[in-house]
Length: 274
Image 1 (cartoon, rainbow, N blue to C red):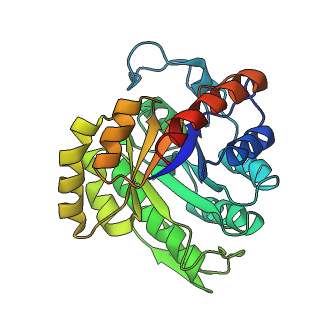
Image 2: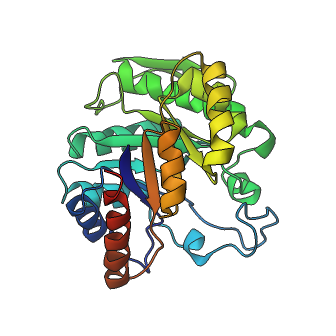
């Protein structure tokens, strides 16, 4: 089983270059970071984690800027979004951002995607929350077309463009892996468009039956990565027994000194299972 790190990069925490270097030095294989463009003041959507929305949600850096900074000081680390909010993103711009990250990192980009939960946030982007799933699927298909075709063209319900040139193309072929986040509502998206299921907010007991259902829908043995895993040896052992490919241990957003100490603890925990 592989181990990576998941976190929120903000203007109040460790800088992305220092974080990327520290994560790679401690032997982790990947770094995935969250995205929120903004948080509406009048927010009615409940926080999925319960209680008040943590401050880090209000202050995230642009993920592709942050990951590019991390790419510049690392050599092996996979660098990804966990997750990019596809219903809030222009597909042509996003295709270029992911491909650019893949180029500057030497083929280490991971495109973690999801549909989001904050209805007011997505409405500010002109997205109808009731159709965000169909919108995300269509934008992902358009992004794949932009990555893989010399003259990319797409005509759909939400995305429509005549043939265009779009460079750079990704280094990875046919394209960077798409890690699909979400619960059971995402299983059809995984089947059609995903390379990995990025499971979140789960325990080994909850995850086992869901893996079976997800793979039944997908019709193939889709790898599973678990996002924001606590450094709990019992839980890690449970995930290992399920055959999970990768755990992304959760790093709280803190200043550099505290973050390095926390990474040391996470690395020691992961080392018990490596």
